[in-house]
Length: 182
Image 1: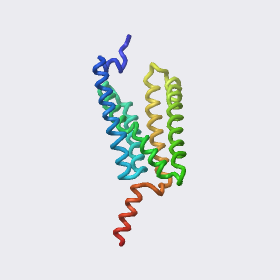
Image 2: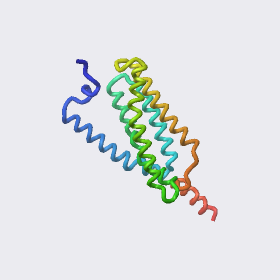
Image 3: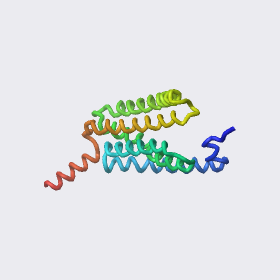
Image 4: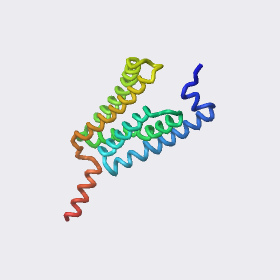
């Protein structure tokens, strides 16, 4: 039986546990501190655009992998933004929601993410099947570029949407401009 990527990367239970601890620490620092704080400073839209571009580039880089080490490095780069969207989308929805509709806005975000999370595996599986099957490299390459394209599409949507009136970075800019004018 041919070893899989997972069996080549994780040889024992202790190594697997160590990988999970590192992943959890990165997750906590990343999703709970880095991206939400950054979005408070530079704005939701800018942060979403940066994350989307980062996701698009890192997922497309899987096409270039030639070793297990590259897979790990690219996965680490992708992992730094993979969950960044959750707190920022909720914050952006809360910022943009009319008074009294914050829960509805957050419910829409949750529903959209779960629907996307349910459709994506089916869609990617179909793309892999249509592009040579599970044993062929071509299907995975198509999926990497489709995922990258989806991230870029999200960036384009951000660039062509109206900035919410409650965006903290926009508020800070206008407040500093008013204090300079006085």
